[in-house]
Image (cartoon, rainbow over all chains, first blue to last red):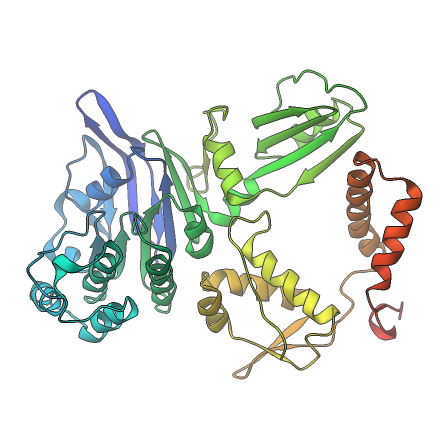
Length: 309
Length: 137
């Protein structure tokens, strides 16, 4: 497996009964990057994360994390991974400080300064009882507990879920702060495309158990183009356009969203003889929606690693 | 230095492009002058709360275009704007922008006269670039 990859999976698959939760996943996460793992609810993100961390047995397929086989992750490897769960499980009767003292006993390395820095960033008082904390405060505490062992690989399962704007900003700031160490990798799942746009170097999109996209954010954004064609009269019916994701028809106008826009697509569009043809800038969210929307053709897979034999 | 960068997510313009656009605009409108210092990549990234690689990408583009330079150990500075494009290349890049503006205007039923007037008015709000950087040396 690739030395530069912190996470690498081949054909990773998990069924729950007859239903695939994750199907044939080939994921590669380079060391030192911020990796956004995106998908709609129930698309298999948490199942993937649980398999990566050895918490759930895959039905088939293989994977490695920090160079270790995910089927047999030794405690030394686990100590180098920080995992923030969706649920923020904590003992309600403990104080914030007691949570830190308790957690620190499980790790060979524990940086109290980082723990205090993180809880300070979320304005938490060390003496506060966990049961009295808000959701955002619990998130801050859990983040502090996850960061203090200085993990090489940070896995955050939907860290933004349910956070108010202030706590949310603190979270994103913490993620940016962590990139100060260039050897640290952050793998986070999210629905928040704004977060992905701000912090991620790479994006992977899971859609109904299948990985549809795994590449740099820039490649993803550049891969989808929107073209506006103007016609003097009603637009002609559309023939087969290579890479067409979505078509929007208006009076005297066709607006087409295409993936892997190139010579073939351009030629097909020119053949429609539009009076005018221009590229329209498109937001990350629009790229995402046109890619996963109901009208999206399911056959397109965008990957930088896929091309390798 | 009377200069602030603000970015927004969800825009049609990628973040690195929002940064380069704003630096260009600040230089053109005189908010940034030759010799002014820009924040470091890390400082701007933490200020804007964006990935440092995005800021680095923006700075690399600005450096390639000769608008800023990096002085080792001292930081990033606005440099004299060098002519980066040949005249032909300049026209090649300008033309589609003009076409797009005219196309939009036509679709909204503006007349030639109205367009000319609007263009003149807008143009009047901008300083013509001083000698040097646009003359065909």
